[in-house]
Length: 155
Image (cartoon, rainbow, N blue to C red; front, side):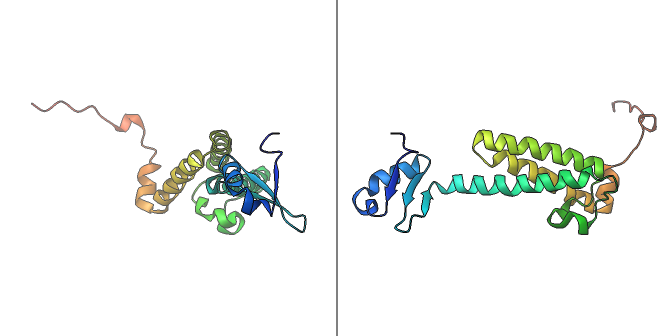
């Protein structure tokens, strides 16, 4: 019998606690409560991963729906909890959505929130930098190459 097929009873917690904890450590232990409720115990990092994947998948879907509307304009009100993205235009938001999707797939595949955390940190950092008018002008400066001249090496 596979460990995922094994269902412990509440009375097993006293007699088979080591087996129950081993099953929980290796991915999940199922427990049937006296009232028939099925409970699962798993490592906290797995629960955290599942919660983050659920949250950001939902955010991704919502953003994709917003971006699909032809009249969409990024404002604090229509971005809601994504208001930190307000400094970006629609093209940037599409790029964010694509990168978020890749990060979600990688996080699920790697069984780690690291790819998702890295993606979000990079976009949040960029958004914070763009909030400052001086930094924004430097980052988005459209200086053309002819404005630059070659400098001679000092002697």
